[in-house]
Structure formats: C-alpha cells, structure tokens
Image (tube, rainbow, N blue to C red; front, top):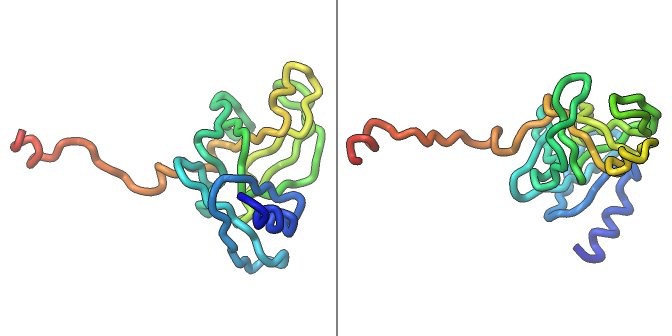
Length: 159
C-alpha cells in the first residue's frame, strides 16, 4: 500500500487492528472518538452479525475447529475493523493464555478474542491470532443474495 497507509495507520488508536488488503474507507461515527477508519475487504468475507461490518477474509481462516462458551468459533490469522479490550489472563480448555477481547469497531459488540501469549509450548501457534465466535459473525455470502439453482418448471420443459 505505500506511504499513505503508514500515515493513516499511525492516526488510529493503538488498539485498532488495521491490516491489508485493499480499500480504506473513512467512516464518520457519532461516537466521541471521532473518525473510525474501516477496511473494506474484497472476496469472500466474514462480517459482524449485528452491523454487517467486514471483519475477515475466508482465506485467513486457520481453523474451524475452535469452541467458545457460546458455541463454535473460527481461528483467523488476521482480522480488521476491531478494537481490543484490556489484556487479561484466561484459563481455557487448552491451558492458560493471555488474551484480549475484540469488539466490532462500528457497533461495539464483542465478536471474539485475540491470543497475545500462550503459556504452553504446544499452544504457541495461536499467538497473534484471532478467534471470532461463529454466532457473532456471518458469512458474507450468506447475507448478500440467495441464488436458487434448482431447475424451474420452464427449465425442465426445455430440457
């Protein structure tokens, strides 16, 4: 992205994770923090269930085999348009981790967490990665259009 990206990145709050790819959109918010910068993603995406803000690309899914208190969750190598809560120690099924909850930058809903530190060697692969709770995100394909691929009666008559 070049020099403009670096300048914009430094104006964001340090707890906002903005990474590539593609277009950066300036979204004016009614919140006290002023401007919120959103990353628009191209391709198959996962979005916030509550406000439909882009959160991650499907190609950044590392694992679909994670679980949280509310059900299934996905591990992502990268997410965008989130802010981080305070860092805390949390005992999970896989051991003790230092994590921070992540919230949608637009609506403020919690959408998952980020692994800051894994204390067990076998869990180190999680460090710096994000878990998004499946019940709090939607597949970008699910929310756009439904295409009926079943043949209609006129298609069957022509065949």
